Length: 224
Image (cartoon, rainbow, N blue to C red):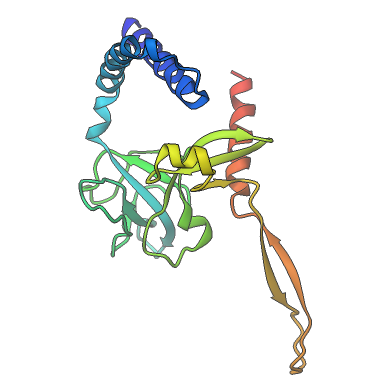
C-alpha cells in the first residue's frame, strides 16, 4: 500500500510540473528545486512500472477464424510488434499468430510471451492506445501509433507518439479526434450503363467505436 501511495504522489508531482510548463506559469526561480523533485519522482515512477519490460506490445490489425470439423477453433491474428528495440520502423508481421481466444479487432495488446504456440494471456490497452492505420487504411503494412491525450467538447483526442510534444501543443498537429468525419462518394447501386451515373455522399466516422468504448467505460466505472 505504501508503494502505491509513493507512486501516486510521484504521478501527481510530474503532472503538476507538466501543467505548469504547458501553461507557462513555472517561475524561473523554482526550476532548480522542481528539477530535483522531478528527478526523484521519475525514479519512483519508472521503478514502479519497470515490470512492464517483461511484456511485449503488439497491434492487432485483423483476425481470421479457422474452424474445421473435429479440430479446435483457431483465431489467427495479424500482428505488428511495437517494441522499439526490434525496429525503428514498425510494420506488421508476415505471418498471423494463433490465439486460444480472440482478442479485440484493431486493438493494442500487452502479451507476456509471443513464443507460445498459441497465445493465451494478453491485456487490451484499447481505447487508450491505437494503431491509426487500423481505422483509416488497413492495407498499410506500417503501424501509426497514437495515444489518448484529453477530452475536448465531449470528444476524445489522441496524439502521435512519434511527434514532438511542444510542436503538437503549439500547432495542434499530429492529433486525431473521435469527432473526425470522412465523406466519401458512393455510386448508386443500380447502374444502367450511363456515363452520368448518379452518386451520393456518405459520411463515415472511423473513430466512433473508440468514443463508444470510452463512454461505456465511464458508465461501468460509475457503478463501482
